[in-house]
Length: 252
Image (spheres, rainbow, N blue to C red):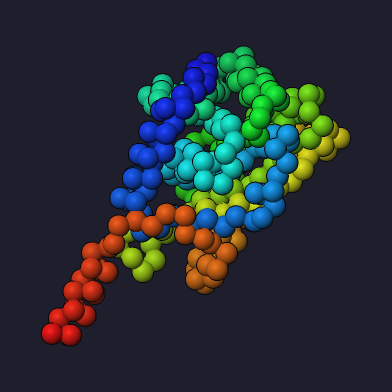
């Protein structure tokens, strides 16, 4: 498996690069972030889990980490993808190969060790349990059980762990370029006695994510966006520049 080879210098460069790409490709990046997520206890590890609908998922997980959390970011990426984009290991990525059970088990052990390690920062794992990119409205959601396995192993060494549902949706609204919506749910604090049944925990995460995605879709359809703060705003769209030009002509 490919393991983390974290680089501060590379992380700083990638931060600049990711922001540049978001500004070039999106009208805005909007985030709904409950106060309870920001207020998580640093000594308790956290797993952010959610849907996997876009190529951008690895980019915005890094963006949110540096903007809101300042955590030790870890992210699991399929081996075939990480081999092609090996630079993600410099940001905290490591691989999983589900076609080989022993290799997948090593990944689960490695992930739990990363989350359980002593650190000045909170240890945070970002995982997309669908295992592959699927349409944002695909139902029912089906998650692999590896996340629940990581939770169980972490709880052998820690008294608790946070689980946070985070989902993404890209939509075209009134602008030429799309809008990226990110939504975080309040953390669920999981104790050892709460994580005995991995199948039940996996199903609970699937249900949580489905409901979360449906709520975000409803917010967008009804333009109920007060909970979403603009994290990044892209370059002005052509339609906006044209409208401004027309207004200037009327003043002449």
